[in-house]
Image 1: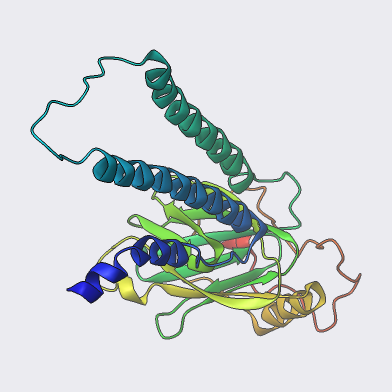
Image 2: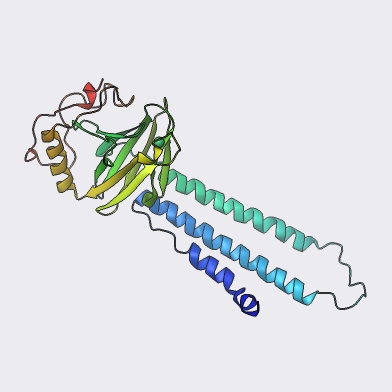
Length: 280
Ligand SMILES: [Cu+2]
């Protein structure tokens, strides 16, 4: 019991340490979220410290020592003003920072070099590279790979073919629902080449657990080679699956459109095996 009592003061320190171990984000947008987490964490820490200190002082200093009635303080305008204004300013400041972060995380730049249409369906994912003639569809045996160029911003157009799913990549500190009939757009810039796992974050039915995917970011030249190899291999969508947004005429009818930085003739590229525009 004595040992437990001795360890009690360490609890706040342990909580602070645990909270400080938040994962770094793999995208620049996720980094904005991470920075906001940090501000919230330390603001919460300061508030907690003030509350703990004041409570401890009050308990120790004003504990009952005799039956005599202590001095009765009725009001203190300055103090009341302070404990109203300070929390208000704190919450207002955090709200403004949240809105600023949201504007970064939800921003979809106009001219992203690459747009990928992500279609969630029971029980996997389909990634259609707009204008590139490449479609990657999960078949339930292996998680499909969303391959992206590192250091470039990619626009994601998210839809669902059936029920509500959710696109979640924990290391991106980002999650967005895929809702039937609703198109959600967002963009992210993966900072470094690497591999991250993603999954559906809404319980969508019996085989929800199969709805995993992998995000793999690679340097731009390697990514272009990957696109060319996919085209040559003839990737094709699952019949009956079509992202509503991809079916629009603007979504890359015909051959692959060049990405910025792409060589004029990509080695190994062949005519597209399937064009997103031709998805039924
Ligand atoms: Cu799902």
